[in-house]
Image 1 (cartoon, helix red, strand yellow):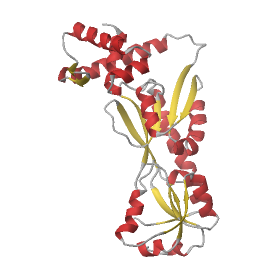
Image 2: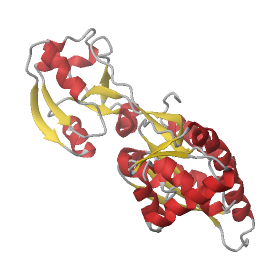
Image 3: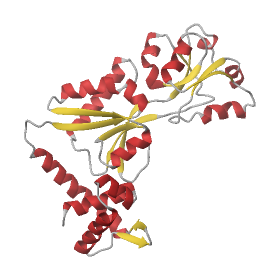
Image 4: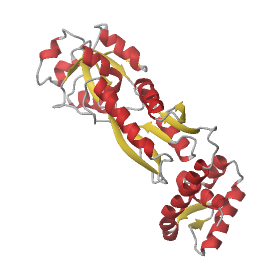
Length: 300
């Protein structure tokens, strides 16, 4: 049994396409197909059911996945351990834009201090690109929003729920049970980004049959936050971007959980066949705890 044949099989499983697997492996599609057929002959089973050009995992193929992952993972770990000591192991970390801007600058130095023998490489990308890079093994671990894919495992790490914030002295600061009508009467800044479910906020006003005073539409978090800080509007922002301001009191959170809740989290995500450096997981968890502690907020 050839390790290259196993990798071809797992790439097709993860990417759900012979074409994408061939691109990721820098091989031709016929070569990938030939490797899988050779693996099937070695095993004496059909890993995929074929219908024209489409491939569907057979029951035997599904059952074989954890064994293939274990073999590949063991091989890769052995290969890493046999490297010369003067060539440091490299960890490639990816993160979506908000995590890149607000958590990664804290996490990378923390992880490096705890693991001086490792070299860290970082990529910032959208959630879709991160998932693709993860499946193609271009990153070892990705910090991203919740995604579902049979080829990955994930661990919930950071609370990034969307909250209503106002500037100090605003009349909403001490108001309880804020109504949708009251909310709609205030000038608002909307940070619009595909990473968040802003449609739920729009729906809130629609269901109440009121039109909100949206006076600023921006696509940059810091711009939206600055407008609120300057006292020119109020708005909903993801919590990661305003931890420092909430602690300092330059932004005030208004509880609107009785009319709207948008709970979101950042997940640490890696392939099913395991994170190459399991000892690093504890350091990642510690970095999150320290990150939250530094801002006097609860670790999620």
